[in-house]
Amino acid sequence: MTAMHLLFCCLLLAAPLRAAKPPAAPAAKSRCAELDEFRRASDIYRGIGYSEEKDLGLARQKAVDAALADLSASISVRVEVAAKDFIGYDRVNDKSTDQESYERLLKTYVDQRVNDAREREFLDCPRPGTYAVVKFVDKRETDERMKEDIEVKKTHVVDALSAADAAVESGRPVEALKGFIEASGKLESFFEGMPVKASLKPSSSKLDLGVYARSRIEGIIGSVTLKPLNERVFYTVDGKPKGLVVVTATLNAAKGGRAGGDAPAPVANLPLTVAFSKGQGRLAGPKVVTDVFGKAELGLESVDPSSLDAALEVSVDSTVLSGLPARSDLPRCAIALARTRTVAFAVRFANGGKTEAMPSLEEGVRKLILEAGYGAVKAGVEGGEAGPALLGKARQTNADYLLAIEVAATHEADLKMYAAQARSSVALYRLPDGSQESADAGPGAKGFGASGSGAGWHAAGKLEKGVLNLVRDGLSKLR
Image 1: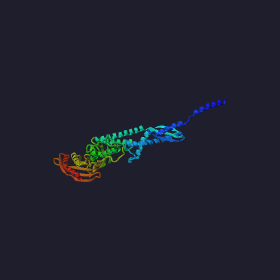
Image 2: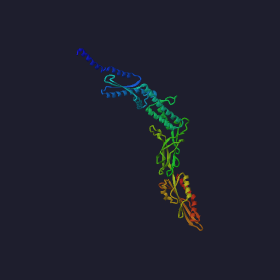
Image 3: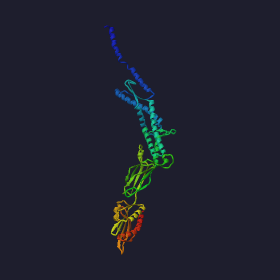
Image 4: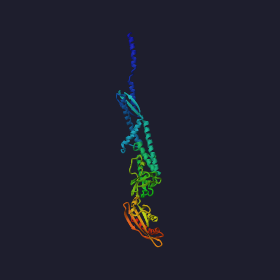
């Protein structure tokens, strides 16, 4: 082989080797130029992260983390501007707001935008051995979405406040209260408790919506008055209330902000809680609701009859304020319960050797007791024992006093008819100790009849009026 042939063969073998490895410089220059374009771009929010770790996986993760942090910082600046432009909050000049609230709001919006970010990565840029990652979002789209989101949420709050104002004007304070609480909850949920300023009406000035909602809530709560229909309710010795127990709820119109005069207006549909604050008893349920007239019947079924008094407390049900912090100054009222002072009474008529009842005298005694303002309950059984022997039975009635009346007729034989000599006594005891308040010998009388029993009844009838006079006097001394 000649020298020329040998040179030609060598050239053929060497040519493919030079073409298999193109220079890296032009490609690297193109990537780094694109990275520079991202740095200069004005239509995006961007974050750029770098890492020089030798392990590509670790290098990428560190670059991504750095890019996200850089993007978050970039968007945070915009969120701060948006807070000032769209909700009226200036972090620099407003020092009253909790910094934590602002940070929560900031994080919410930043996280939403960062999650939408796109990504580009660059190897060996801006210099060999460096891993670069760019995270970016479109600036115009981000700004519009942020503004739209804020405006939609503000509209929800304004609509809730306007509806609540309308409920106040139309005399529906409970519905209004719930509306203001709903608006307050939306402010907290949407804006993390940040102050938000907006106009409730097109021509009105901007208000701090949170301050407005809270002031309206306080105005309604502070203007509600609960009052019992009767401040003292009596119950009998068997624990039964004497009549219905009713509470009324009214709204001070001027204080509550309702137009149309200062006269208190009934509060309908107001939930109330009822409980014994003293003593015990039974209620139909722990909660009631006022009717269209602002009245609620408390459903008192019974009171422990062994107690001389008890008390109920009625309060606005705190569930009407669900979503707000618990408070102890809700409108409330107390209702005193008192057991009616009661006189247990017993009439014994010993007619000769037979003990009988005296219905007319018993009825007269009952009427006198009731006229004196006491409850009346019969002690013992008809024709049973009278006097101290009745104390045990009288105590079982829970009465405060025992009135024991005894009439005794002694039969006498006469020529053509029977005669009877009657005597009476009236004794009054205090219960439960059994101490004697008074004891009087009543009038006597003589009667005649065709039989001994008839003569006894005749004599007893004559002294009935005198016995009732003694009863009246005895009751009057108890006052």
